[in-house]
Length: 259
Image (cartoon, rainbow, N blue to C red; front, side, top):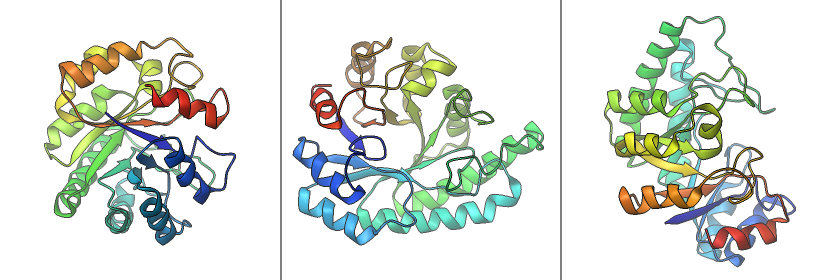
């Protein structure tokens, strides 16, 4: 199991660039972050090299959305730039969403004025083109379903949606990011859904429900989920800890080390 610390959630007590050292000090080899614009990519690369870390993913969409036909060119252009950043960091996975967010964390387009057929067709066409770019670059796009409770207006809210879209497109470089916290709220039945979409499962985000704290603080049976994914399905994928620590970050990562 590859365990990755999301430094957009954990070690917020420290400067962004200091968080890489903290991840390594805690005994982890993998790290992930959010958006790359405004970040010093060369410094990130240097910090990772210094501490023996690998960047497992970051967001590859920003302001342009899959569901908006007029955003297609901008989405793909930004993706190409993100792929260039990924190559510099030797990062093999990039997260994409049905809708991108702006600097304030709000959706750039809620899709309310778009017909569902338009949204679906636009998302499928743009995701297909995005997958082709990923194939050429040797990276994998992981499409994330998000709950529409904390994120009202989000379009792709279930693994059924993202999983089937990936299956229809059929690219080995387009898979789903299964966020346990989001999916427990939207669909439950996680074990069966993980089995159902195992062939397109590319990445997992970990956070207990309902508060999105460390595993063991809520209602989710992580031992069962781990057994199914790692042993039954035999998947060697990244488990990213994108969660809000209930305790200090230093104490949190000590618990996560034993996950």
